[in-house]
Image 1 (cartoon, rainbow, N blue to C red):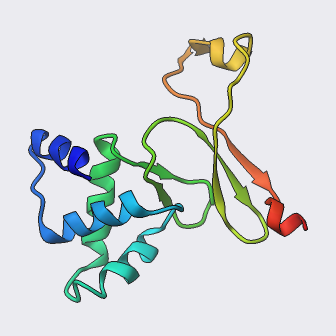
Image 2: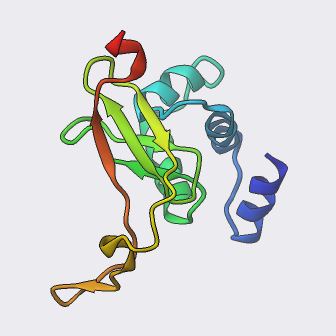
Length: 138
């Protein structure tokens, strides 16, 4: 937590108690919480906390590369990943669990090797996979 706080201060981010609570929640999160998940938990300690504060703080953290905002649920609610480096995600279509997927793709993968496709510059590649998790398959 200290390292993230230092990075945020260096970037000139004001660390209010509410923002610190959100940062702490994200760093201790083992899943991919939504704004509602975070709001419901933090509101217990900060009753005056608004969803707008949670959303704006998560947006800020995402914009500066400290967390990732995921749209894996398609038209559903966005969720947030405390792991900022690029990796893939799997969504169980039965229970809704989002799982991090680290793949060592082969060096000859044409998508990873491409710097542009049809004149479009590629800056980032991230895959969402959908299916049944191992618990739901059993």
